[in-house]
Image (tube, rainbow, N blue to C red; front, side, top):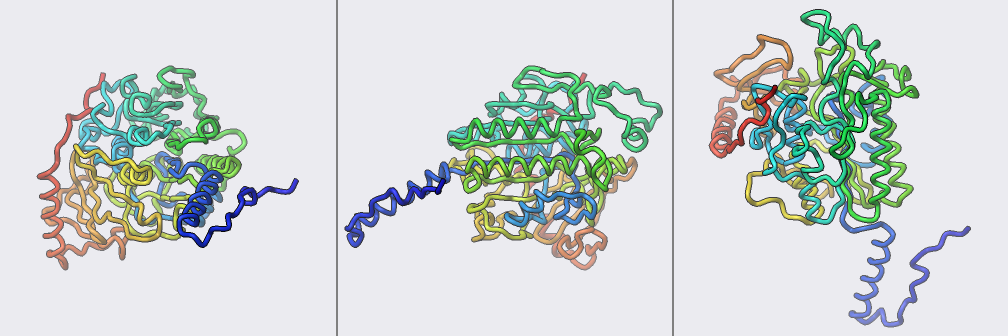
Length: 483
């Protein structure tokens, strides 16, 4: 059948030379085109990986992990090379994404317990305004699939923080462990020696829909596939209005599981199988957007909550050329592989400006036409001008917290470390009377300390830190109470 063009049905008036008539015709044409592309308010999809390293995607340099769909997104959209998670471990990182605020402000960063556990008493405070709540103000349908990790008790679940719908595991997939440990180092031995023998029954994690547990233990072998399918189903159901889908995979956090179709297919082993299945799911989402005519009005963001978990050895990822990994405030702990995709909405290119998951709330709010909350300090900035290709990122600084302590600060190309510590190796903490200083544009691996040559830069950074700390208002620690 020959395709019909809706513009052919419009009768062109003979008065186009008259200004008012011409204006009316332009408005009519605009209405027709918007009808073809959907609502003028963009849809948002955020795909959040867990413990994915900076070097774990093909487009970010991995030689044996195939990620053709993410590679295509990067070619058609924007590849961000200086994009940061809000923290270097799960709970505070996710709090930062949801609130646009450094997690110490919401009490979701702690030096007692670094993340929430199944016996934790609290979660993200109701006083915080989440990204989902922001978009609801603009009439968005809001759905979440995957790992939440901001409180598993009912009052803290996604459906009580702005999401209309939730399906997923409320915390990390290595929790509720039933497999006995064989030694003092037994936890790490699960991933370095026994990883190929693990089963979903070794972890009694709950799979929830809304506030109800629908499966326990969750079948983690099929988790990535089911997350993708559920996200696609929900998006199809809400395709006619603006929507926000937050798809937060539990993987490639250990324990590693992949469906039968992907297990044993990657040259990188089981870790590669997991990442390649996530990439395949993203390809299915992009295909669905094309089928539903949503490509021209949807922004998809892909990033990770923190860097690779290095003590898990072959079961973990790699930060590429960056130093250290998860749990640390070196670059490998918080700089993440990030892609923004949105044909007709985003100017393609490689972006070397700074950005952060903290910036998603103000950016999406601006694009959706909803004001950000004016009664609190936000640490995020609006990246809209960069996405449109007509400006630079307003983000010029990044604060690196470990727990409730400020360890490092980046200002432009310079990064000062006041405290350094490996992510998970004991007795490595060092406090530096003269902070270490690196130019992370010239030296992204943080190998060459230039503090002696630049006391002037350190003085500026110290002043900036003093102003930052003077304005820091913290809610009580929400992570410390357990049992």
